[in-house]
Amino acid sequence: VDPGTPPGPSHLLLPSPPPTSSPVLLPRADKRRASDDANPAATKKFVLSGPFDLEVPTNVVIWERSPTLMPPPHPDVENLRSTLTTRLRNNYHEMCHSREGIECPKESFIRWLMERKVADKGHDPLLPSACHPEVSQCMYREIMNDIPIKLVRPKFAGDARKQLSKYAEAAKKMIESRNASPESRKIVKWNVEDAFHWLRKTLNATYDDHLERLAHLKKQCQPHLVQAARSSVEGICAKIYHMSVENVKKIREKHWTILNQHGIEEITSPLHVANPKKVFCYPVQFAISSPRLPAVDVLTDKDSTLLRYKGEVVRINTLYFQKLEQLYRWNCTDDRKFENFLPRVWCMLKRYQTYLGLSSNEGHGTQNSLPALVMECLHKHFGVTFECFASPLNCYFRQYCSAFPDTDSFFGSRGSILKFFPVAGSFEVNPPFSEELMEATVNHLECCHQLHSKYAS
Image 1 (cartoon, rainbow, N blue to C red):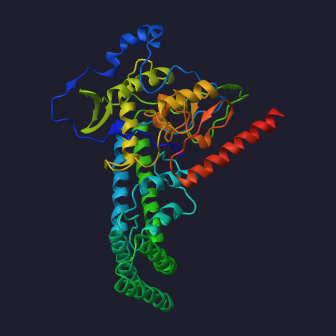
Image 2: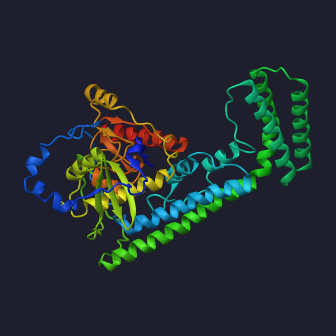
Image 3: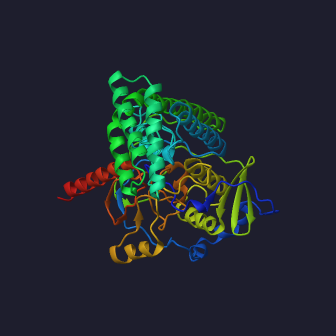
């Protein structure tokens, strides 16, 4: 997930209000697990059964790398990031509707985040703030593709006929209301009238006849409609980006205000590892220490575990909550007593909830995880021990790359694949559905291979 990955099984993370039934309030995680840490050898013998294998060690080798200068996550900051991102997502929907008269393309905002983070040089792990160019080609293409109306593959000839009529009417209305050249108006109107004439005289046309006629009409009209809408659509893309930049400033200011109150200062100079050695890969480490995080309530409701902070509730399947416990034991080195476990789980779940959107219809089409049997086969026959696009929720192994190093590293993330430079190992690469991210991944992996070949020779 990233340039990392959204979690495949989004049903594991449900943005749900507290249940109507009275859930059972459990003690704090650190108290509940204090006995576990008294005998670490005993805890490692416990094997959690599920669609994953957390017992597989890594065979991936990297050069030692310096710790990240990103500030560690905090629930108050994550709350603010969620609020601002949700507002930004809603603004995008409203602008598509008010300026272009269309519904926002499905999951377009998520793909925009993925595409922007490929090139982003900014500080925020989720929102872009330093991209060039400012206008996202991904967002631009998706809006343009739905202008003047969104086309879907019809089921029957009658549906195809209606869609042809709607497209013709929308094209005529749009070209008349926009600042288009006289030549463009003439071409679009002539083709629209020709389409209506064909519809009136051809009452028994087949399904394929209607599709061919629609394709012809779109081929003739779309270039002129795109030209007429260009400045407006570019304005939407630029506006969303500039709003994101302002949001990042607010988030960063709040984050460092909180950390400064705990006596934690920002590190501005880059860090370097003296005499780096080849080692097995390890999770992203923080150069900036984390304060003791505020309390988060944990509740159980049948097969779900709910975490609540200041009225904000995130829900996770209890099996996967136990999985996070295991990942935390394996990978977190600064919190052996689990004092920050619940707040860090809450931050991580809140991040993915924000990323995927609060609607139950969002996030399902951005990535498909491989079945556990396939992962088992890849490990058995090809020695695969590492996933290049995963999350703490959908990872099969305990070592993987993900979208958000700051929230995910406590649960095993090695960071973004685009900033990960292995020199040996066997990998599974299953990127989310973003053309820009896929292309960047291929280029990055080819670069890693060339560097390895160079040093190996």
